[in-house]
Length: 129
Picture 1 (cartoon, helix red, strand yellow):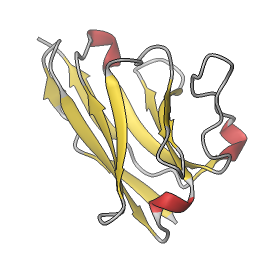
Picture 2 (cartoon, rainbow, N blue to C red):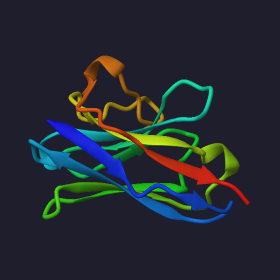
Picture 3 (spheres, rainbow, N blue to C red):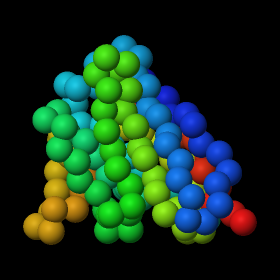
Picture 4 (cartoon, one colour):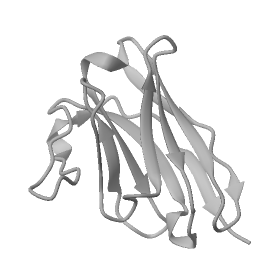
C-alpha cells in the first residue's frame, strides 16, 4: 500500500500547477486522501483532503486557491494549485487519512498524524520568478 506524488516543477508567482497522487495496492475512493507539504526548514503541514464522498477540506493557507479532485477510473487524486505564491514552495506529499478527512468548526482540514499512512515520496514545487 503506497501513494506516489508526481508532477511538481518550477512555476512563476501567480501561476498554476497540477500535481498527482497515484495509488498502488488499494483503491483511492475507500479512504480519505490528504495532501501535505514541507517547505525548506519547516515542519510538514496539511494542505487539504478529499473524503470517500468526494467532499474536500482545506487548510486556511490554501483555501480559495487549491482544489483537490479524484479520478476513480485512474485511481488518482489531483491537487490543482492556482495563484501560486513564493511561500507555496515545498515538497508536496499525499497520504491516506484513515479518519476520512476530519475537519474543525470552521470547515478546515484538521488531521491527526496518527491516522496518516501510505506516505510515498513527494514532488517538489518551486515558485520562483
